[in-house]
Image (tube, rainbow, N blue to C red; front, top):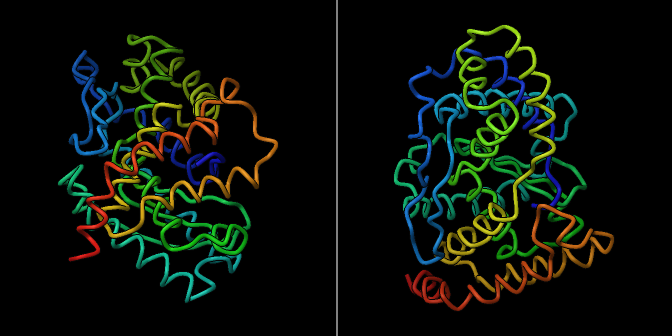
Length: 284
């Protein structure tokens, strides 16, 4: 989504940069390039640069999500509307049932779905399948079920593609170099650890999901929604609504995210390709 929710991600980042022994030096070779998902109708098959281990990212994200849930409970903002919660979980579960198309292992993730009362127009899915939808998507945007499926499918796709782990891997190498990264993550150089902790958090917030990552999440999310029986055309109406509520958004060349007009054009082009999946899902 265009506006990121920083708090839970910040906790994840802090946890990651303080876990200094999570990677062995031997794991920092050139074998860090791979694609995290299987190719499908949406055509997402880009090779990704990954150095941080998926298991540790998943563990830390679960911890950050738990802390977020605890805070929301204290503020009485967690799952305050049973009807909204049931609606979001029903949609999410239909989408989750389709993730095996892209990643068979994701079927066994410890998925969790919650709703927080918050006027922001946003949702997120943390590594390992921890989903949060903010009530603004329903209360302010008035998203339909099909539109919510487009949003949640998009966020699930970020998790399936492990875009967060990819961004962090790229950022550390760009700033510190491979040798410095090895020292940092293995805890063999105190200075590198101190510098990495300070710079890592800044880098993470300076590098939200890039344009290509957003496009991948749009494409895969559209396919997930179609396979789950949600109208792919709803992704277009969703972004038309978002565009109408974000008139002050910067032009595409000033942002890491695709401009709404470009995003809508891409979604319109892909919709016919996934529509047979939608029609088949409706029949079944």
